[in-house]
Image 1 (cartoon, rainbow, N blue to C red):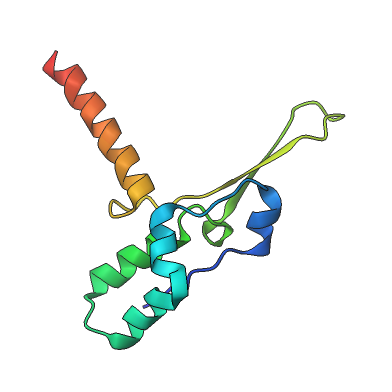
Image 2 (tube, rainbow, N blue to C red):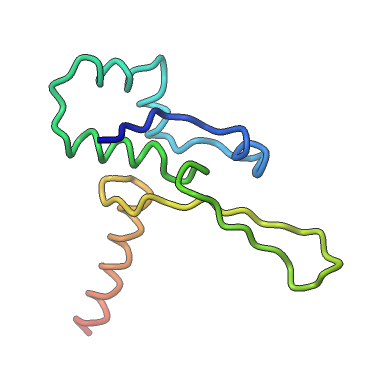
Length: 109
């Protein structure tokens, strides 16, 4: 089992000066509460995995896609951090739910 400690790598902070961690991440990382919960034990494996995925979602830990302009003289570069695709993640889970609702609406009509 790999337990991902919450981290916000310097690379990520350099890529987007307006980056702010997702709100739920702040709850788990504030004052080391996630580390305290892990040490206290009593969490099921699925809970540890889901929260660990959520904490790494949208960070460079999961990898980064690098996009450049097709014009060789253009200096613009765009970095996009990969997401966790976990349904327990507030960001990924909501996106998945919204897509499912859209499909159901199309099928119902």
